[in-house]
Length: 330
Length: 255
Image (tube, rainbow over all chains, first blue to last red; front, top):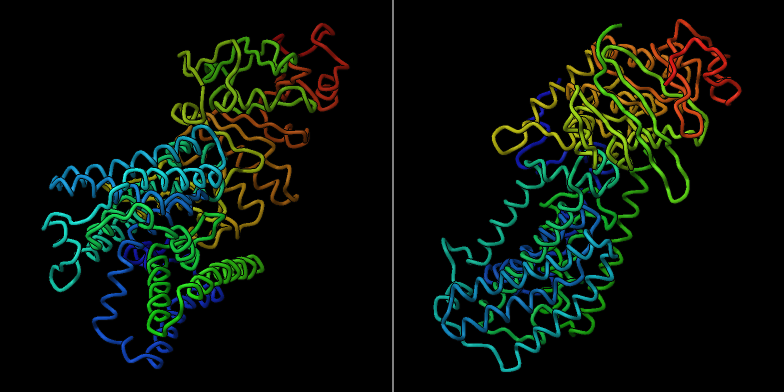
């Protein structure tokens, strides 16, 4: 038998599933598209390829990555969560309310608790009650936004100094928020590639019945993934509130679901679940971050940026379809 | 064979609404033997298996495993006891490779993380012990395997766990001649390794090739238990179709 350690590679970075040439070529599409986009923007704008700007892109992408990792795991299990944008807002607002009273740790706990509760509600309704995940999380998308706005009746801003310092500061030249994202990415890779749970969630995504018959606790796995996504959204909300030094209930995290789902799909996780890699998802987020940044530098209006983003979602879905068709032809 | 049964089913019933699918079934599995379960469509074979697998618990009756009364309420319960069912559609995860499928739900860990090396070598040994040499790589995705190879993986998965009872639902239904022969050999070898093997099949030729005992279900009732050497296919067909009942002076035990 072959030595499996060499096949798996460090944290599944070189996934053996791309062993056939066409899949491998399509696997290279994402890094290549990213580089191409960077070259394009670099030639169009002098400001793009500056250290400050690239740093800005990673900083902007940090919260999205924190949210994209659990969302990707959820999608790999064939689940979906549309409510993440509102969860970001509720968590940011809850944290902000306490922070305004100088209660730093209570704010952190309240934000995380909000994400936990929303994740539990989504997860119970989908996995225990058996409701359709799109319907449930579309509902909680609206509910969450409403709750965030009720609690943010008075503007929430001006947080204690340590919070602002964390949101704006750096450690070892790397922004603190990027550190958080790095930790979440490493955790995501370990969970997916190194723990039984990672195989289990893929199994649920491929063939739920087979997973159940193999003795897996399918309902618990699904529930836990919704909770993880809720917590990821909460951490993202807390990060954003700290960075902006404010928590606007009406606008915080609006449209995040579109952005994150596009990034995850671009990152090669099909909505039908059953496969995917964390590092691709990270590149997917960075690609979208670069696109958004470049459009700002090239003076795209926010309306046309919106149109581009929506188109990318559809293109990503089309690419995924082509990839699957080619794969099946083998 | 004088060994006591490892799995004993006493007077189990199951109804769906007004329909009594199992009307008090007795059934037993002796370790080291192959027991065939035959009967026409709707006789209750699948319902009996689903009960033993924990997918659809029985309404009443008793199941004893190694002499102890057990409750089978979900697949996990059956798996914990060492009862493994190989389903007709095999219930494999196409996107996972052979090793991952064989260890799904019972992964080997090295501390907290997975021990891929150990799982791979154990999967290889198990396949070898079943004289399976047709798969190229253990890291092949299951979707790339042929029907017979998939069947082999599903059966190997059942053996890997030192399961005590392996139930195979129509294992040869989708296979060609050569592959059928391979799988039947595999079934026989499971029995020789001391497992209690149950095989459900419509194909009496297969049944007579591997089974030591043949149980016949007819409309929710266990009509007869026959020893293979004491019977012949035409007698079994008569029982299956209801043309012959126990009172007609059979070679089988009254059950």
